[in-house]
Amino acid sequence: MTQWHGSHWYGAEGAVTGVIETPTVAWTDAANGSGGTIAVSGSYAGATNTIYTQSFTGTVGGGTWTSSGSRTGNGNVTLTLAAGHYLAYCRSTAGDESADSVVHYVQATSGTESVEYLCLQAVQARIAALSMTGIDAADVVVREVPTERNVTLPGIIVSPQRSIHSTRDGTNARDDVTYGVYVAIFAADNQALTANTPKYTRWLQQIAKAFRGQRLSAVTESILCSVEPVATVPWGEWTNNLFAGGMLIRCTCRETRGLS
Image 1 (tube, rainbow, N blue to C red):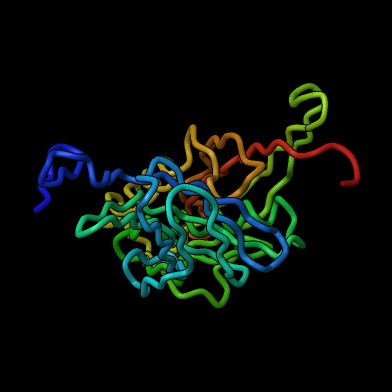
Image 2: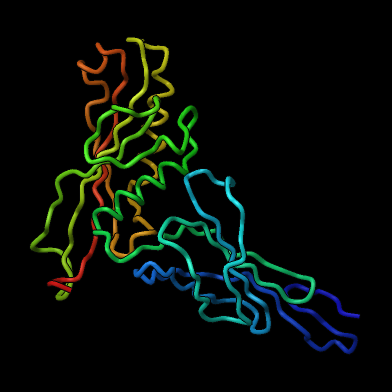
């Protein structure tokens, strides 16, 4: 008979027969459309570590977890994934006990996307995951310009803005580039003056807090994001019975120098 004490299994003579620990995972994108690699660390050497993934469309809990690869003990697990957004975690199992890592948001890319476009996609995915009251994840979209045309309202448009190429920051091999990502919120408002103010300001606060002082975890080059306010309700949109608010998210990325 074995017994569990703390983090160890003890057998009949008191010998250690197993250790179950919570694993830690780190994602590396293959950047060629094939998927990527999950590095597992911190688990018991004899544990079976299985990586579970699900396609991520912005709705947490809306997908099905699928076993995408496993190994014994710590090390790398290669995942075959189509280019896209995913949630992933590791379940470490030894005997009848198991421990799950933190769920991570990861992105598999084809290697043909620009860093700027990856930033746009990462901002879109993070906003969709906020589950903001009244806005469906499917209505958070990336577009070239922030227009409400052919968008289900309320909706959020993520669009590129002017980038800033620093000549002073970076390293001896990398340059810091700051991409502007404009986030525009549109909602049918019927020229309301007070009825929807709590809801709109809550949306703006949720988005700002999701990026301020943080990096985009799905973008390898990302090092820091900052948030700048913009005009909350442009007069022209209000007279057209629309609320139009938003913010500018500046995504600073450290990129390799040269033509590589």
